[in-house]
Image (cartoon, rainbow, N blue to C red):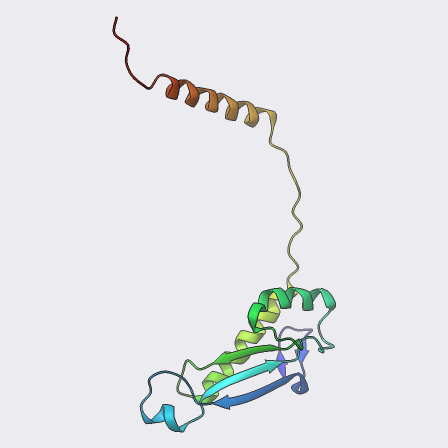
Length: 139
């Protein structure tokens, strides 16, 4: 079970973990111990998330979202399998929390008449400055 918020808890059947050998330096440890964690969350089939949340989650997950609607998160930063599991679960929880927040709807506004006039006056002033540049004529 993974607690996302007070109201949302992901069930064990929605999450699956697989372990593999980690990449990069680490001496004998990297060749022997399977410390890298690949956490798979069946997001599309989850009954705990609404359709709008799933759509936002798909957009936020990007290439971590698979064809069959699962999110795959890989953690291999530390040499400890338990710490990598914890990090992967925390990353998934952060991703779902971000998807739970609906974006604020943008309210279209118009520039004020005063700001429009100030902008046009500034443009005219710059135009005058640029027009005065150039070769100086002899008298």
